[in-house]
Length: 359
Image 1 (cartoon, rainbow, N blue to C red):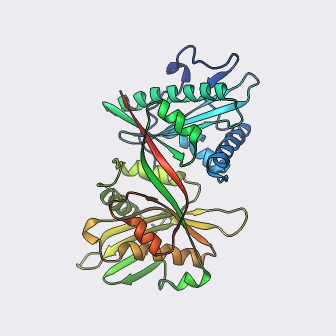
Image 2: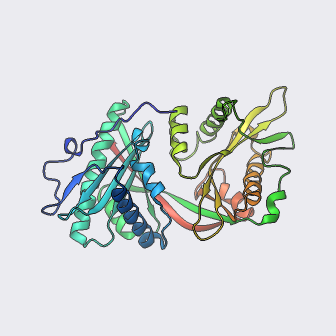
Image 3: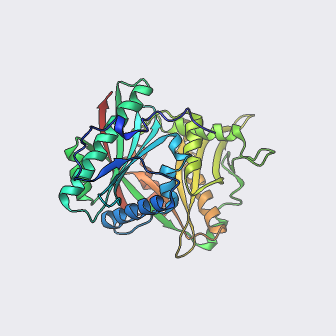
């Protein structure tokens, strides 16, 4: 399923000043996502960024292709800065994530000296703010939010963000939990099981082998309803939701689960978990909880715990050794307490930084 289409300006010359302030001979342009050398270089830059800012690199070419491939460009636009030798030294990506919310990736070569690095950073920010005005106007917004992330200890990135008027608005704990083979029996069957009047099951499969659309819409509806009162919640259409999650390199349809109340004649969807697979080059793969939501009317009935037990049991049965997730350090539901009690521990910390741009 595809969303409504790209609302950004694809030609950097249309949104950047004639003299963007780069060193002599340097240029800003849209990258060719079909060029293997370009993808390899962007991956190299992203991994170096992670090593310096977090202490280790985890990105792969698949993560870059999410941003620059033809499918990714349905909702994104990219900019690179090349030096006088043609080498890519900086990369920015903007993502029309939902109405009023634009995600922004900002990566500058960690080997660049200060003045050149700052010049690249300024160009990326100028371009991103112009793109925010473009997408905001296309969506009929008076103000467009730019939402970008940073690792907790990345002082260079923090300084650039503060200098461009961004505010640090949230802290996120990136947590992992070890999984043992014996936990495959944590639930009777990860495909379908019941407890306390709640049924936990994978989304159904249609005759053509694809997931049942009614179940997918139920997952979307539950997550939209569960996060209405959460930080930075923004309405996302069903088509946008499906398109975005299908892009994840770890996407698997058999990692989507629904929880249903069995109180009445017809099962009522009350919880949902969207999982992915995180591949490892050095050991067993892991599972990841991309989304976990429970409607307010069903809280207190063990729905979240049941869904988490389900993905843990599925991971154990699949030979995986961990389950990861992200939690809002200031979650109004106290979700981090549940995760900690179930064995999750914080591996590293990230932050959200926002800037509102008048359209």
